[in-house]
Image 1 (cartoon, rainbow, N blue to C red):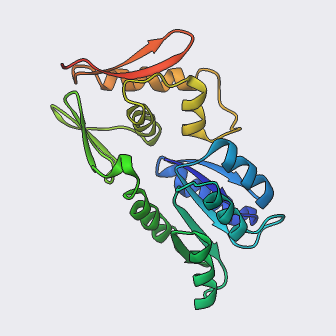
Image 2 (image 1 turned 90 degrees about the horizontal axis):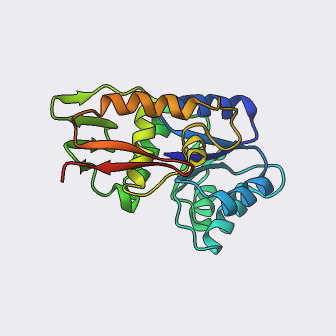
Length: 223
């Protein structure tokens, strides 16, 4: 999942980013409300985590901007204030959930899982493709011989291709999904991941096709 984190506390933001990346998510980190508003309008996200108090536009105004533009992307608000009125204000602004600092990373991860289950493409938690079965909520991929052991990057790559099943995904889009926008990625990093994942998908009825000059697509060859 591609998550946008808007938090001006660099230490906290880095901790959240590292934790979420360890779970296989791509995380774009922004520290300014105005910048976040422009980024979300241009790039979008699967889910947004936003602090209330930010330089520039407040976190609540960032959320209001999303909703005015008709965006339904899930939003979790972070705040040091836990009063009922503060929570009500955040939810009325359009947030889906509210987390009071300090919090445990395990709780944030659970809130993300709960919201992600509301995404239309994740209503079916177990999704078949070829002779594979992808458990989105459990983040496990199974084949004819049982579970396929995938490191988090390879799992995120498979999920990215599956989200665009049968459609070409540009290499740049894959890099953004896996590493975040603006991340410094080695030129061959995506190719190496594609190669490793291809080997593990052998004889599963699913292959990753290279469309030269355009990108990659997941192809169900079992039919």
